[in-house]
Length: 299
Image (tube, rainbow, N blue to C red):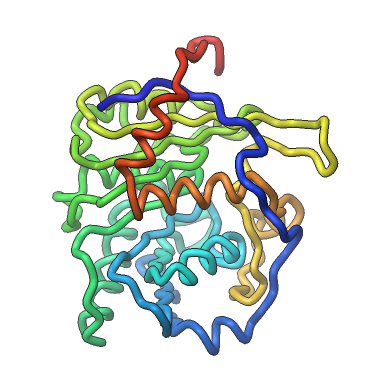
């Protein structure tokens, strides 16, 4: 079933807390944190100590997002759902290696994390869910097409948040027509994303014509309320200083300046929860909201 383009009302879900979360004790008491993050092929592994599900989420950070505090509140949300989270590093620093190595490094980190889970006799589903922001979205999309050559299983689902590579082109494909057609996916873009725009998100959606379950979501800013709802490139940022690993580069500084928790986070998180837990209902429910969008009028 193919879905068309939909508008999302900005205040779609209620959300309570605002600002930054910081609870280091949570990560000590409620989560087993395995740190194998020293090299570009490394990873963090977050394993809930209670109510463990068999679902594993690969959380793909954006370019330079080497400090998991940047997305920490979202990672915490996933862990509270019982999901294991793998946070691959894929970069040594914000300057190296080049983007063409990102997918290979990611695959090595994921497979090493899966080996660690196996060593600890933790039973999981073989297929993994991927959520990626910015360059992490581009890497996730690339893996969706090339998982086999990377030594990975086909993703169980994909959520691409503001996917793009900016001025860099490494791993960006001209077409995603070879995506495994059974992978349900959501592409989510922001109206005011001036960093990567919508071009890759549109390309991914439009060139996957044979995919059975697919959804394109654009959210819009709303300055009529206080605080206003924004729709920039940085909406997936959701700080939890309990995951601060002291890597404070340009990306981390930007996140410390731009990140907030609001209804947009609820939209993102709930969409991904639905993609993991009940994708059929997600797509069937939203099919009644679809409308042809003036997609060619955007950048």
